Amino acid sequence: MKIGIVGVGHIGKTLAMKLAKAGHDVFVAGSSGPEKIHADVLATGAQAVTAQQAVQDKDVIILSIPLNRIPEIAPLFASVSEDTTVIDTSNYYPARDLKIDSIEAGQVESLWVVQQLGHSIAKAWNAIGSHSLVVNGKPAGSPDRIAIPIAADRDADRELTMKLVDDTGFDAFNTGSLANSWRQQPGAPAYCTDLTLTEIQAVIDTAEKDRLPKRRDLVVAAIMERMSSSTANPNAGFGLRLSRALYM
Image 1 (cartoon, rainbow, N blue to C red):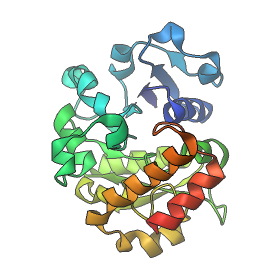
Image 2: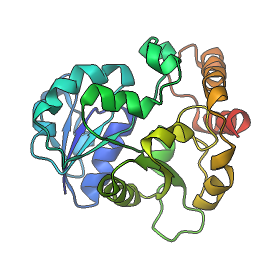
Image 3: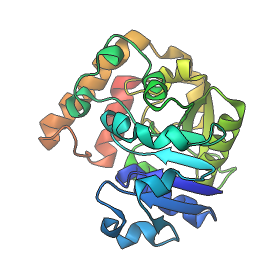
């Protein structure tokens, strides 16, 4: 497939490398222009392009940018076909994104993104740590293969997203519609806890929507205490232990 990826942060660059290696035609754009994209992002065959080029005539567009930047790139979607599958990997963190009133009032993050873009989306790769995405992919059928929650409203988006998750080395767990995608937001038991399909199935219905923001913010506070930054990634083992302790 022809896949455009907007964003070359921890998640975006890994997806570019993995999906290109899996045989897809990948076009990746960063905020500083194609000439600033590091060679390692392109090492498995992805091509550096502008953001406009990344969304033109693609089968799939993956957004891997901070959630508060979604409105900035929304104008690019005026010419994107309704048939194009758009996959969002973002999460809402007030310490980074500033406060978004509607999300603070309880709006599901994915539905806010749909409002900004004017285009249906799928949600995937938001609930796995960047280190785990790099190192923990395994072949299909591996008994301890980590599962990544995904959500979508359209069947075609759901099926395609699940296939791409498999291409990156993980099982896909369908959490349902976008209205239910809060079950894979920060603070939920399935968020960054590296569970298998069976393990997610056992905890997915224990998520409590009203408690997610408090749990999310507790993890951010713990990371800030250790890392002195709300945007730095903690040691992978520390982050996993912390997420499991507070989210499950």
